[in-house]
Length: 529
Image 1 (cartoon, rainbow, N blue to C red):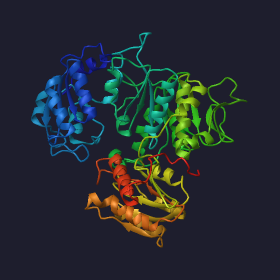
Image 2 (cartoon, one colour):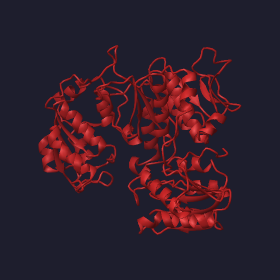
Image 3 (cartoon, rainbow, N blue to C red):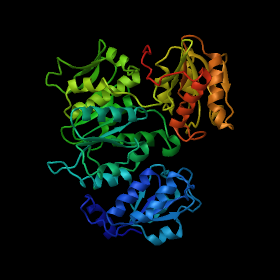
Image 4 (cartoon, rainbow, N blue to C red):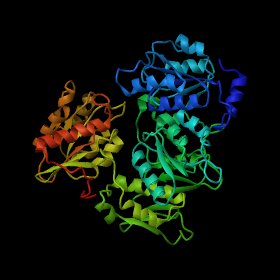
């Protein structure tokens, strides 16, 4: 059980150069994040015990497990399911973990807040940090020429996080800044802050899981340069327990912001988050939206993307950033992508990036795979992979970009209601192919709102044939001018490793069906929206 001396010591650990030696730490999880935490703490001299399930032979987790003794950490193999809990009662822990007497627990993002080991930690008054707080406390390992650590720019939202992080980092790099995109985007922040070359800025993608564990005040509370919540829609309700808890986690992104709180003018929830946020003196609220911008906003006027925030004459003038016509040529003109560009531009401008630099950088920017990516064309039919649309909000944005759609939908719904999404897009649907394990809810939504629509289901038992069968059925429904759109509105882990594998198998099935020459993996550059 943590005593007052331990708590006082933890309050002093706000620098790489503090005394972390011999601190007893338990790290829950051995994914990329868990290993980065263990590696970092071992480097600092802490006594590190990693608690994780036995890794499968030949897996990435197995390789990480083999490295733990090398870095000076130990592994306790325990039958833990981060999502559904462990076989231990809420007030107990594996004997070896209890014997370690941890003074601190670092939890990987996937562990549910009510996981038995976290309940045990609470019963023992053991502080629990996420990897983001740990990284923030250690951010001064490598400093800039003026002796200060890199500034942090935070990005969250239900959808568009990764694209906005990549855009923002691209714009900062084009201006000559040393910048690292990191966090939930795939590169642990703990790896970024330990990079010996150092950075001027970190653009940090934060999931609601990571935000859940962040403090808003006191030692360890982040103080970002600028921050954005791109949008808010129901997601991960099964993890957070309620829509309100999910919203509260997302709102943490704005706490203590120094320069700019960027919010979505079309999403009242993000505006309310900014209004309620406790920020640094001088921080500004900067709105973005697809309409005409007001003072302190980013928006679009007559097809021109404008900044009316970071200029002295913003009451009467605007700065041109780029045009929709130019972005069409780059495959970046879908409405939700335009919104991401405006948000990223606001973050970059808050860091001093000139408008001309933004325009030039956008001329070479390309979306990642599995984001409204054309993977095939045949008989005036486009086949588009938007496997990254893992929730209804993302699928809604994707569907709005096309007029006539054969929709591949379904997967792991994560407790989210899909009824409204189906109802709002019936008029644009030629037909639908339902995949995944949670097919019943999707099937019932189509029965309620589109009983005459051709709808087919793919048996979830034969994973290897999911995409070939879906493509074959979609081809039978599609007509000239249609788009066959994989925008599942659901997570992928029921049948696939991740959304990337789901998208890749879809693309392969399209190429196989169309004869191997389909698609050149370009963005959906000629969409009408």
